Length: 321
Ligand code: ADP
Ligand code: MG
Picture (cartoon, protein in one colour):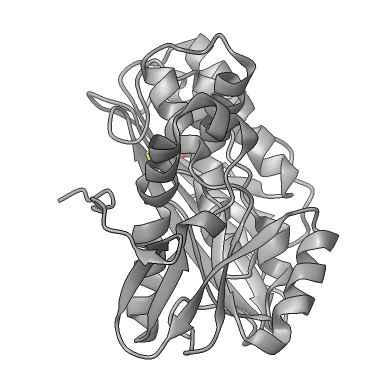
């Protein structure tokens, strides 16, 4: 966008909020943000882009777009066991529509304020379609971050929350089938995913590995075990499904959403058997339900069983290219 009063006032009006963080020496308004890391912490940085019509339908409410843009990054921070602190926003817009910006910034700050994250800078440009990139920097006590590459044979595989809701919700948003309470619940799971930030931090030092579920359970657990150089098996009957999902879909569709649907932003993590009870207790303290769905094994590859029999299904996770 050409430098203009419009761009300046757009930032002032929708994105500049007073900061209450003594670790931010300069935020929006200078050429760069100046952030002071705490001694004894490692910085963790994540970035995620949402492209109109790729990651969200154009008709999705601006509030949901803003909320999700932050939540998907919070979820990456959660998977690392880190505390999210500061974010920047690169915003490409087809037009400076004030109503859209009002809703978008409200959703964005809702998600940010739930986790005390401040917006410290960004960039605003014009383009043919909406593209929203958010980068979050956070911290974790030195050496305490959780990786996806450190699962070992014998570890137990857990997921948080319920799986498959968001993908079902997105399909109901697209087909405009939102009259029932169940479908609305599922749509809200897509629009306002609950990034498991406190769970991620509570699992630091307990989980042997973790990944967040953005592309689908099968594909994301596969990434975790590949990165760790191990195999795993999971049992479909153990995958936690919400009552709304099982009421809104038949069993096969529900399972399909759970295994291959993305956008849940729950955590999938592994723990050593001796740490299982601690993990369950810590999750309870965070008010998050966790469920054991499988086990890590020596070797390579992910085996899915249904009622203890090998289960074959189409399992391409989302790939951009
Ligand atoms: P520069 O020309 O130095 O890149 P800009 O005019 O692009 O600066 O931005 C001015 C200030 O506003 C900078 O501090 C930048 O970080 C901030 N900013 C720009 N766009 C956004 C946005 N969408 N959200 C938050 N801060 C923004
Ligand atoms: Mg700029």
